[in-house]
Image (cartoon, rainbow, N blue to C red; front, side, top):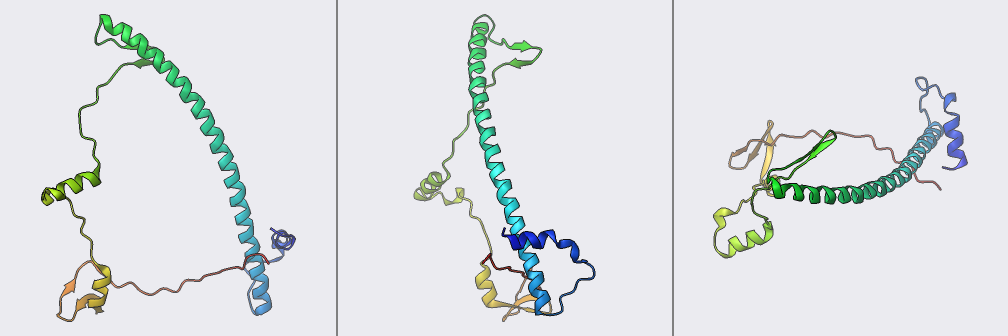
Length: 180
């Protein structure tokens, strides 16, 4: 942000917002300068926030990684102790006032590689086991259909449900130039 933009932001009080009006090119130029200064301030704030966020994320990641090594160490100790306990009692658990340690079996299942499975099914002619995602071909529909009294109709009188006319809306676009 340059000195002129800082000056524009600092002297914002001189504009009475409800009473200010753009009446000519000069006032439009002044307003665009103010607008550009606000956009520059937004960019600066985002840049600072991003820098801080990146450093905080890096700090957090290093702390979490250090904790992960410590957790892995203790998990190894718990596993060794639980293995010793399970020699006498196959259903043994470690229970403390601060938590428990036990094991859980995961059920058998299938690891899928979707692309490979689909190729294999196609080679073997098992196409009925392949899902096909159906979507309308909007480009072709637009070429063949048109709106008549709010309904999407083609030359043969066929009507498509689920398509409604979208009104044209004019949006205000303000594009301040970048700093010179």
